[in-house]
Amino acid sequence: MAFSPTWLALREPADADARALSLLEPLLGAAPKVIRDLGCGTGSMGRWLAGRLPGPQHWVLYDADPDLLALAAAGLPAGVSVETRQADVTRLTATDLAGADLVTASALLDLLTRAELDRLVEACAGAGCPALLTISVTGRVELTPADPLDASIEAAFNEHQRRRTGGRDLLGPDAVDAAAAAFTRLGMAVRVAPSPWRLGPARADLAAEWLRGWVGAAVEQRPELAGPAAAAYLSRRLADGFAAVVHHSDLLANFE
Image 1: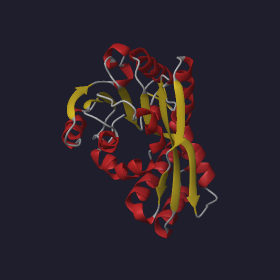
Image 2 (image 1 turned 120 degrees about the vertical axis):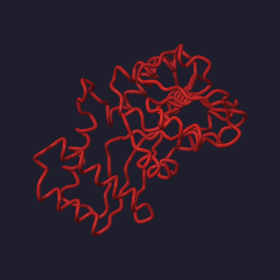
Image 3 (image 1 turned 90 degrees about the vertical axis):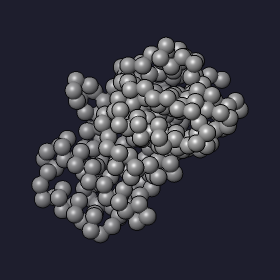
Image 4 (image 1 turned 180 degrees about the vertical axis):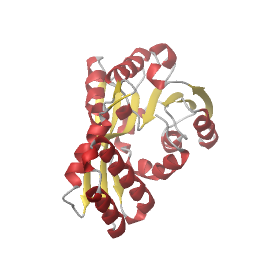
C-alpha cells in the first residue's frame, strides 16, 4: 500500500471537497482530544479535519512509510500537537488504540482484506472510540460523454480492486458494506454518506491521472482489453475532454 507524495497531493483537494461534512455532526458535542489517523499519508485528513473539530487536539499519525510520516507531521495545522508511529495499520489492536477519542482514515478500507477489516473494527470497538473512515471506492463511475467501452473498463477495474495480491484478497468496492456490517455486529451505530469525486476541466490534471490509472488497472486485470481498442479509448478521452463522477462513501461508526 505504497503511494507517492505527488499522487497524494494531486488528489487532496478532491478528497477534501468530497468528504461528507454531515458525518461530523455527532463528533462536535465533545471535543476529541486524541485522534489516531491510520495510513495518514502526507496528512491530508488532519489538514481537512483538525480545523473542523472543536478544542485542543493531539494527533497520532500512523503509516508504514517514514517519509510520508515526516511530511504529515510537518504539514498539520498549527495549534495541534503531533506524534508519529511507523506501523502496519492492518495489525493494530484495541491496546494500540487505547486512549483515542477518535480513529480516522482516508482511502484505506478498500485496500484491506476482510480479516484486516474485522481486526480494525474490533480494535476500534475494543478501544471504545468512534471511527470516521472516508473516501472508500464503491465501484461506480459516471463518465460524460458516455462511451461503449465504459462498462467493460469499469467492470475490469472493480475486479482489479477485488484482486488477490501477495496472498491477500482485497475488499475493494465491498469494503464499506463489510465495515458497516462488522461495526453493527459489535454494537456500534453506523452512518454512511456519499463522497464522490467530481472531475472535469477544473481538475484536468487529476482527471487525466485518474483515467490512466483506471484504464491501466482494468487492462492489467483483463489482458484481453489491451490493444488498439483500449489505447484508442484512453487517447480519445484525454484528447476530447471528459467529466467523471467517481463514487466513494464515508462511514462513521460510534457508540450512542
